[in-house]
Image (cartoon, rainbow, N blue to C red; front, side, top):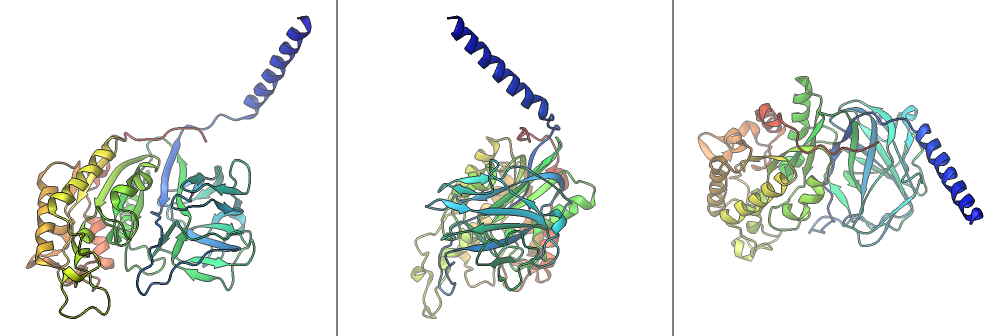
Length: 434
């Protein structure tokens, strides 16, 4: 018995000394929390006529350029295999400030680890955070995230029409290289879904949730004319540097049906609720639900009707769209997020326009304006429409396709949002340790 007590006592002393030593070695974490500073809404590629399928990635290095809207000294990177059906192996990952093109500023280059390991196998259907890494990032500074995929890795979780080119090179692990000369350029982010910054209490994120109009369709590479980026720049210009604006738009996305990514209701948890410190949500969705049933495939008979189109069975009513928006409101508020509803903008002149669809748009917009269901309303329709022909966009805001704004239109949208709607009590701060 004496021996047992002695062994137990020694074990207690050993554990106390070990844990005590660790506690002494660790510095107290500064007060703060993680804030989503940049994110991309990922989706599984859906091959469409005339669009090449994404190839399987094998023994390649991918360098992707992103642009957080707030700054900080410590960050973590979120990777995603949430749409994959098999484990995704990242054999090496690094982060650095961007110099030019695929070049990085070598003095800022940092290795990313996962539980202390440089390698991770992300299970199918799962995300993965890197360990926190110290690197000084200024607001709107371009950051390069490089990953090496030993492969074969199907491109299951991507964001096409990205705001900046990515660089695909190989064979081999080239993540530590200062440059990737001869790399293939792709306007796509692969398996990269977010960057969080450690920030003081009071910092928060605003999510812009929508389709191609939110994504910034038509923007030239690295021009950053999308309205969420221009809203973030407007906030910064007024000295409001504590609010990040995160763009979670997907071109072609719909509220009620899949195709260009999962429908908005299905992707909402991943693309909004999973982001840290979100306090406000701007919802601009619905135009694709209205117009897609009138899409005709290339080569269709000139006298064909929408009854012959590939989405002919996916007509939606105003009541159905309103019910979808009500679901978004309820789910966001359950997490303390204030929801700002944006009216659907006009599109007469596009070949999928119809009087039936216009009636649905008008009915949904009337509900957005008058129901008091949202915490605030942003009447983009009133801003963008031609006052003499309300079903059409103003010519000065039209990109030329009659549904997407051009640079001036995106800027007008960013400038139109009342900033007081983005202030107020921050109810959804995610706290923790670094």
